[in-house]
Image 1 (cartoon, helix red, strand yellow):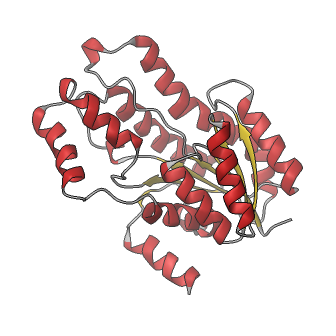
Image 2: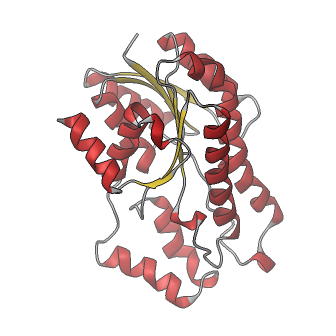
Length: 259
């Protein structure tokens, strides 16, 4: 068994992929989850060919049986479970409240709130037995800043922050964090540029267009390295916090553990 075993959802691209690669470089065995089997296969093979350990389960995290299947797979392959990273997320509907599709609004909450809850609940018996069980939920600045056109996303990320805080209060032996990863150059940003003009105020829409045009979007590897480090080494004293990937204490932890 590796020193750590970690489940990461939304692992096939963007932040999830970068985090999975960082975890493997840090010595963790990773169970990769996303819907795309082909993308997961490429990522798993990349990790294994570099000397790391990875397994995969291609499945929709919003389906009722997926969380328990992920936990069972991690325990089967790695002999235990030390950390869970809830990274999979949904932005849609990108629309004002009056125009939002209720079915997309509901799916957003299932992916962004129910799925992390269900995966954590399934993992808790194993995380409690781990020497340093950890949960890191990927949140957003939108959890604390309302953005017109993002009602479901903002509400779901605010909910995941409070879920993290309650988890920390209920499970004192587990370290639970909600991470703000910054504005990353991912498919979500591409969706905002393609579809956001009709849903967002012009100044808000132009902000994201300008970030892209001026090369100001973060590469996934930067917050991915922080996310991986927190999943393996976040101090228990931080449990319950909503913390930014570039907070001074996070960067200090990365320097210390890399060093």
